Length: 341
Image (cartoon, rainbow, N blue to C red; front, side, top):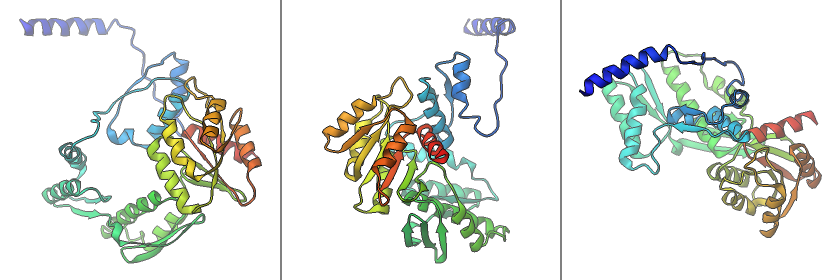
């Protein structure tokens, strides 16, 4: 009987589907097309998009930028990616096994250093496929210097390499880059010499990630917008400036964990300039300034991003440092204002 009803449903749906007013799919491509999604959805009256994406896609910088753009327009994004909160060791190993499915015979795998259990999963898969495996080795990283001009280091006894990008996490990313280049070189990519790798690293740019836009005073922008990102940013700023206090320019959404983020920034703060992000969920700049003042730090409200940048620069002396942090949308606006000045 169940089979009969299933077949009946399939037949009815097959007929009905031809009569339903399906929308013709549209494809948007090209530079910036992903960030246009918020405007496209709003123009079509769509307020609750549903996205099916892999965990890797959800962790991608461009996907996070999309989420922030949708947040700015109060569009509620629902994402299905089979995420399991607080995964157990068994779950982590299962995820690792799924990720290792891309490892095929005839390739060379490069893995950024992970926990021992995850690395063992990769080793087992590579052994099955007869694939060479390289795991980054942080213990073979030799730091030479680090400043606002970039970072100089050696790795696996080679170098020195010069990295234009700032921050410890970018230095660790560079180790993976070098190991990938070495793997390619072993497979005949002879032009990937140490000199070529160094040239690439020294010219690498990542807008909005601990990006120094001007000097005297220093003005850094960063897309940190959650507690984990703010932790990494503050660690990087402390490494760059030591005990020096900074002027922070930021704005927050009321439904985010904004108090935790700001408390992490307080020990490094000389003053704050705060704005209200263009969102119905934004925390008002006057309310945010009052909270910061109550924590014992000067906070000045600004009417918008342009005003915020101007007020931060007015507060700063030539030897001061300003750091703007928040959503990538906000960071892009700050970059625009500085570029136009």
